[in-house]
Image 1: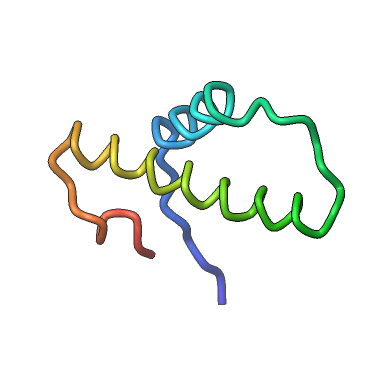
Image 2: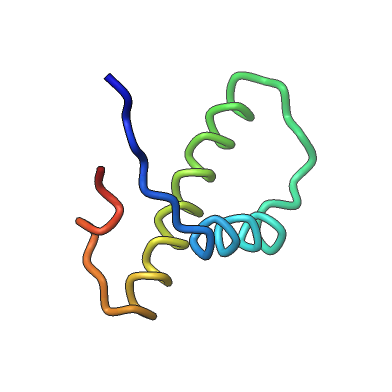
Length: 65
């Protein structure tokens, strides 16, 4: 079946702006560098969701499918 995903353009924008602010490290192709990128990306996603949740008085369930 088809899956419909909720899209929050404002959250995506905030996430990408956070990348610009906090993720200026040069690309590190080592195993450790890749691991750091994955962890860092997750943290930025949580920060973006938190900002949107606080702005619109939402709870985390809003972002669940």
